[in-house]
Image 1 (cartoon, rainbow, N blue to C red):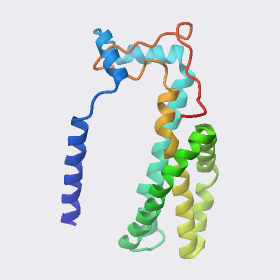
Image 2 (cartoon, rainbow, N blue to C red):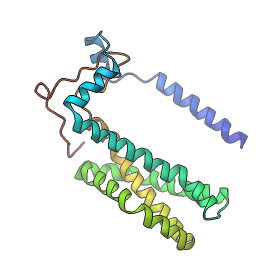
Image 3 (cartoon, one colour):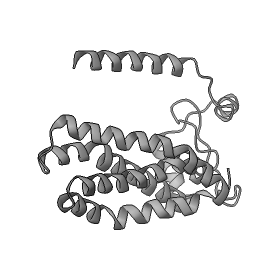
Image 4 (tube, rainbow, N blue to C red):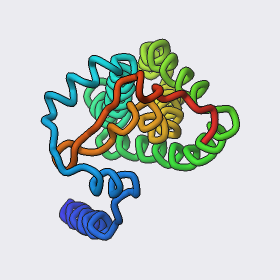
Length: 205
């Protein structure tokens, strides 16, 4: 177990080094140069609720969906396999690793698919799947033996990777214009809809 923790420390150090050497996005740099006044987070939130309620609640829904999907597949499933289905910890973790390797293999092709048909069909598929399929998938895992368990986890993993393949580009597209800058470092100016058209949902990236 100690070597595994040592490896995570090493990976964490590499991630920190990479982040410290990354340049800030051009949009952030330009916005910082233009604005010196810092607005409070409460004021900005009130402005967003007033002028962009649809975009704000859409973002809220996507964030909730992503976090619930992550928790269900990557955090709860190992405990469920061990505590409820009686598998050993090693067997449960290896099953999850296998599913994650499949997710890694699928995320790039799914991202390319979203470039061809748009993000919306994939997001609708993933969202509808997480509403309709988790209960049948868990029931299959309980009654279908080893094959049923692999299929059940695979279905949930597939829905998660479909969601992840598009969510990184969907969240900025749904954000109100000029509201992506942290309020702690520069003013966050969110013009009302009369001055700035609300963002549209592009079909391609």
